[in-house]
Image: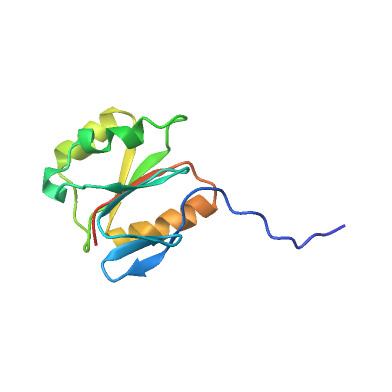
Length: 125
């Protein structure tokens, strides 16, 4: 027997879109930075990209089981995080995938739709 039933998407937060310069998570508007895990979405008082340190994302990387990598939204434009930040996160055993925050939000939904166990730190739009 063949079934055409849709698979249920993985649980957890889904970014539904943008409201001006804010993220829309389900029915909630988040005007600042955003932390995402497969289980939760939290407002994040994000530092400037140039001031970002591994300590700023340590809580995300402490998730159990450990995430595959950190998706880093760098704000309204793609900016490379400081090499020291990338080196510190990689020394903890995690890769960093930087992209502008809108692209990172779209990538989050695609990767979570594939049930990938990732985390994201999105700087404000």
